[in-house]
Image 1: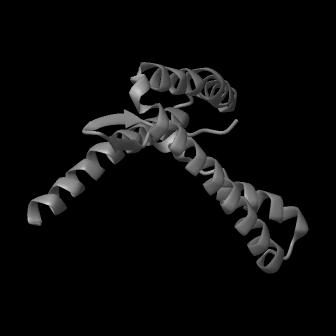
Image 2: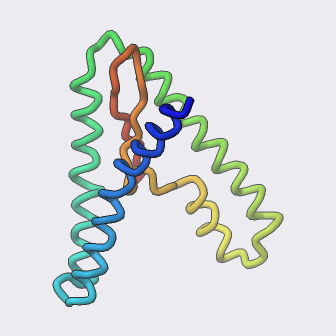
Image 3: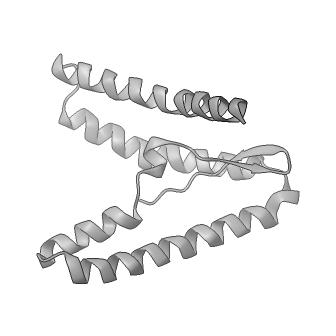
Length: 137
């Protein structure tokens, strides 16, 4: 039990630290005027329009066809989960967000999470780790 706990802690740190280091590097480069808003917008466009779709394609393409059913199930779970989150966020926003102009922002923030920007979740499948990348453009 103790080993599982520390193993989980070490895994969490190994996943989180690289992102934290990149964040700190970005702040440092921004303060030194090495990067600006234009660079950030261009880099974001490249990430969301080129590299993440390519990563998704490669992850799906490289997995054996025998795992197709599991992959399709994961896609359906993600689609229905997103729809459920969207509907619940709409209901919540209607009741608790007073400013109508802010409701759309709130709802989008709920169902369009930062999963693709922060991490690539790993899902265990038949003693094999496959990467599942969910992103929205």
